[in-house]
Amino acid sequence: MAPELVKEIDGPIDAFVAGAGSGGTFAGIARYLKEQNPATRTIVVEPEGSILNGGPAHAHRTEGIGVEFIPPFFENVQIDQTLTISDADAFDQVKKMARTQGLFIGSSSGAALAASLKVAAQLPENSRIATVFPDSSERYMSENIYD
Image (cartoon, rainbow, N blue to C red; front, side, top):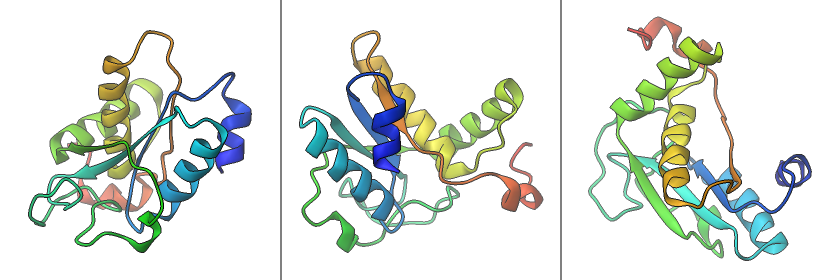
């Protein structure tokens, strides 16, 4: 997946923003991007209730990301920043993408989008930010996520 990101984005990737469940996708892509361009910022997204920012673990509604322990995939991966996204912000992006783009993303993708928008606000104009949407909302339709 990482080589595809590099190939599809015209120019250097300034920041990579993604959630972490097991950490495998984030670690693999982040490691590859840092090898290609050490200046790429790698930013992991977590929901409130995950421990990466040092807080206590607790329940959250954002499915697929958030950890109660440091994943083994994170060994030897440079993480430049950890962004905590609330369930409300993640689900706001889920609803917005469905309404404005016709894309039915899941809550972990909503969190990745919310974090990417925060990162974009901090970087210079025309910066290239890559993220991945690892889930769709198909399996969550019965949970009334669009209410």
